[in-house]
Length: 465
Image 1 (cartoon, rainbow, N blue to C red):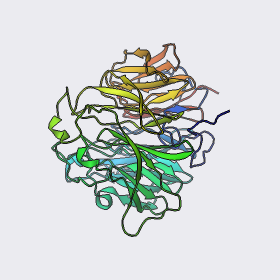
Image 2: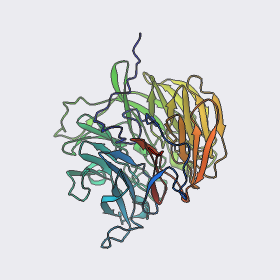
Image 3: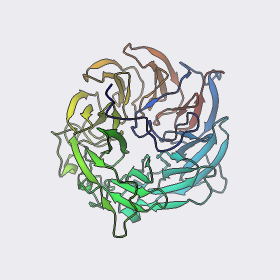
Image 4: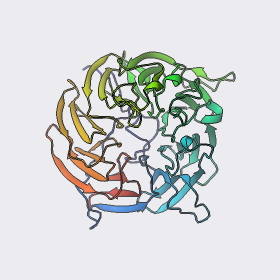
């Protein structure tokens, strides 16, 4: 029997029971969970299948992560827990997994020089990544932090400021999901345009960096000339897998190009004379007809222009699934789901979506699930790229990604309607629920519980035991 070319069961951190310590499945970033026994419906009013509900702020974009009996999530400070800290801040908070009781939080003042560096009221959008008793995250000030998972109020183990130490220019707010690979951390920087939406202030800024996990020192960066051609910002986090027996790192730039890099050897220390250059293996352009230079002349053009990528690249069975297209705020409406050979970057198929796409794909049982801002959920055949079914009933646009768990698809919209469907070739809606507030965050599942973050509440869902 031939071994699969992509080994997705390898992880770099120990899991307690069935924790979900980062955004997406292990290195692959696939939006699929192995959890079982999750409910087909729930009801907030009656409490049916609701374990607990915890208050958040008023803007919550980051997906919850669950590890070591704690649930971590970023939000804003519009519902302050500390009466001494009531101003606009980013908040990273932890709750007890068993009952949702508040444990600790870390707050960060806003970057005040320019609202486009750290948009008012948006809080911390980046999720955490937990390994053992440490949690790695990026706050609203573009600072990479290594925190004590047991108490977020303790001084950070280390801090790396991407503005001052990597020369990036943040836009709107950081959204980075850190990938742990042995002794190294890989993350997108969030660098982008300035407040005019037509200028890159730091054209040499890295879009992808590597930090030393123990010290927070900069080890390496990409040097592919991405920054000048970023249409908006850099929101896609990297993924990693083993392809043809070789570890490969994948990254989607804000210029609409996907890159494959060679990961650093585990023996690599932070160099004394500046960061190393990541070695590129191949690159893939999901929109070859789109402009690649002087891209900001297309700002506010809804019919033509460049592409960018918000969701993460997903690895499954030797293939890379990428969703991208015109920018949701400033660009054209076209968007696609693409399937690429992970060994060489050759396109295998292309599936056109209804409109802009923010989601990361979920690949399961020969099917690919994706949602777009055209208020449509798509089920696509993974082998052919042909539509199996679509569901266009939601009230709002989808910014969240579909989560596949226990044979079901879970996803919420920006109008607050939450959908539960059968994750199969047969289109079957199991439940639609009004959760009362917009949903940007992708649901997460851990230890028999489904976690849903609306803008204002964190909801733990589970069947009675």
